[in-house]
Length: 244
Image 1 (cartoon, rainbow, N blue to C red):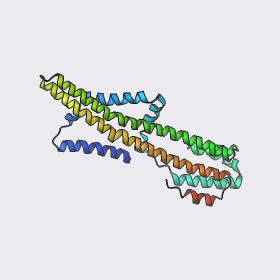
Image 2: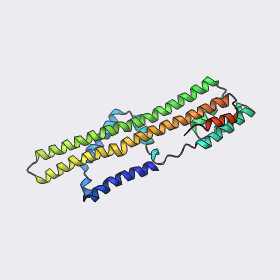
Image 3: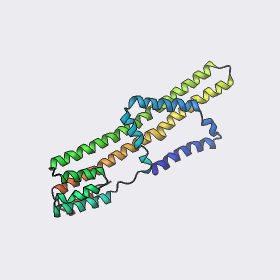
Image 4: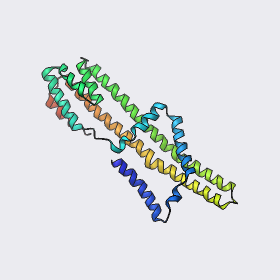
């Protein structure tokens, strides 16, 4: 929720300051400028990204506004319990746990252990899954970062087009006003979208991806310990050291 609060605060501060200076809301509303900046930015993103990245980016970005905590404490308790169960009754005793585990990464680790994979196979399987997910998440972050680079450029393009409109119709005072408005508003749209949406979203997605990777590294460490029959107390002590 803090991301949503930050986004609302940023736009409220900008429009609030504009109104306090005597400006009007309508002066910042310009459809041609919005069309140039939004249309041009999204079109550039479509050219750069493939369909998979485009879909992944727009599907993942809403999660920054209401993402749930990873639940590290609960997962540590689960892992320690599974370690006790495997040490007491063997790896096959984890089969019922794997079938009801909702987290895909945890479930994969349990299934590898139950299937009798050796240490290298378990480590390799978890590493591949972790890197694949992280790569997809970082591609989404890179996509929004790229949009943050395109938006100000499109704002400049809108400004130039507005000034061209002014220069070609110097006899018409109304046209001059419209052209100048498009020029300045397009710049505001481009810089505002980049600084208050695209770039912050990219940074948050990258931060969340790295945090999830650390979380999965902890799980991978625990799964290898369970496979090797490590003492549950020692495992719990080590997992508590992860700062997530």
